[in-house]
Image: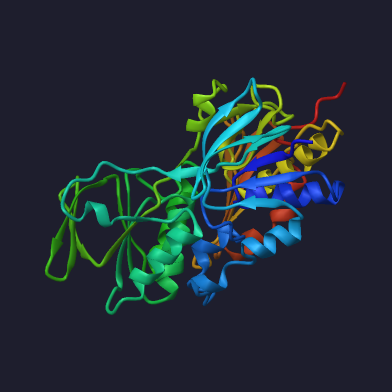
Length: 391
């Protein structure tokens, strides 16, 4: 019997494997990954410094441990070159050479890759981006070098702000650059974004907004970063967190339908029979949500389907806690395309913002320790983002 094959050993792939094992102890399962197959929680990377975690302490299980724990075959350092839908086989490459691997069901949990900005200069190649534990180890080693205290961060989105907060707690000088006029501009209404920025600035984080990096050159004391607005900074390290792009190349080459991510319905099946997608690479009914809670919902539903109980993924209201203790923040954006009116309540240490359509609460933003205590109560009032259809 051919196995269920999962491509990817990130949070998506391993979470699905765990859910599968809850339902079937002996279903043949093969996990294929291009990296070393170490299990770790990716969200930990953006606050590992403040948690005092060395990169070697982040991993929760190596190849051998995960093989035993999941009762699965795991092929590490193996690249998938091609999907043959008709033959239901994969063409793989690793140290053993080129391998043909058959599958019964195929799950693409191939994640997303950092977006690279077009930057000139002889220092442009030294811009770090963190999207894996391997990336983090490299960045951490560079950061640990003597006097590497001045950090310039590209991107004032969720991950950029989290890294900025984390670096601040370890006495780094942090400057955040973003083309948007305010941090978290895609998630927050202007009033909250402005207040959020002020709270971070009060703690010592600097912002250069409405501009972008054009050139990075080596200078005697580090790197000289030139912005499009004429500003320049001398720093030791540049970290890019401008966003991720779903890894769709493998699926596209196989003729699977692609939009922003790999298109799937609520069953998580792609446009091709017996091929599924989940995690950061998957666009579920138009929703591209690179967060932990959607991933967990996907894994539970897909595990049921793969073990003979066809199920649809359900998205309840899923607020996101941003890891910025310097300015505590919880965000539940209203659905894209929904017309809302924002109502604001200013508190002594922050703000409550509610996104309303008439009297229906579509989303909210909670800034500050007092406001974030309202997370659970407000979440109960927000309709499901994606409910299971009633037949």
